[in-house]
Image 1 (tube, rainbow, N blue to C red):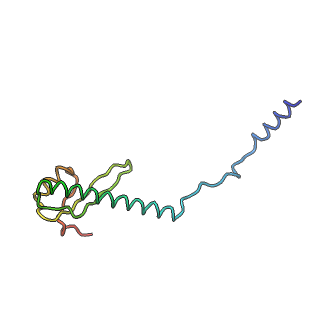
Image 2: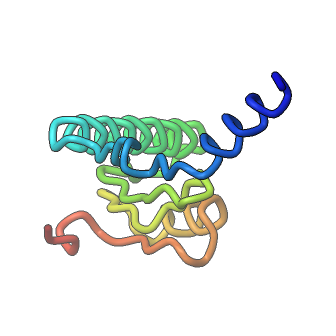
Image 3: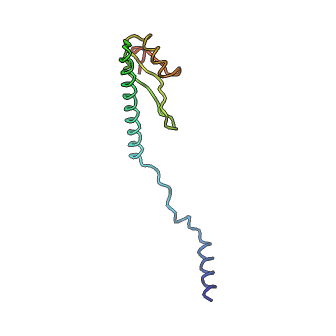
Length: 117
């Protein structure tokens, strides 16, 4: 008798549609999105400064008469960093030889005044 009651109760509960009681998926608030975007910009700016500093240190060590004054890069979905463009001040020709070797053929290397924002 107890087994029959338990079986009946389980069947009754199994047939109930609980979807009406589920909570909707939470969407990120605009504040959360703004904080994430700001963190992404800060991370990108810090990376640009670090890359720029490293390139300038390497140019200085080799006594190349130019300096990187701006670095544009992006972070891919996989987390890798791609340097898109560097703006240099000084001897563009000599600087380009070294920068092209370090950054690869896809990075654009421009004279500082040729780069307009």
